[in-house]
Amino acid sequence: MEDLERLCQEILRYLKGEQVNFLWCQVNLSDFSDFERDVLEHTRKIPYGHTVTYGELAVQIGRKGASRAVGSALSKNPYPIIIPCHRVVSSKGMGGFCGSKDTQSLSLKRKLLELEGVNI
Image 1 (tube, rainbow, N blue to C red):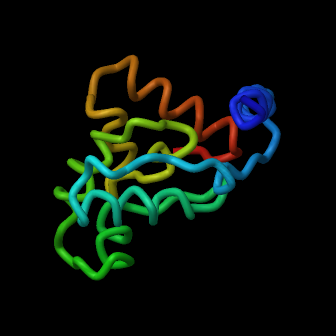
Image 2 (cartoon, rainbow, N blue to C red):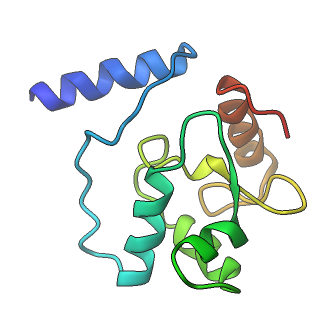
């Protein structure tokens, strides 16, 4: 219960524009493949206010050329913000968010990045 309270407080701080690191928060990724877990765990380590491309993330996990597979793994992210998939962008711009490329999802991704001082 203490962790849940802390998480709620940290999310509120984050949404107020404060720099928050969620690495302390344990997440259950046991239902994911090794590849998907690797993608999500590396995504957790992307620093606040920074972005990487899908291709760069693929290289970081030793899977050069697997940018589409990285995007597919990120579309399954059960913990947005805690696993900051909004920090992974296309080499040509925003890319998708939460498994969708609709206008609302991309607007949310843009707002989260702007909150962190990133303009795309």
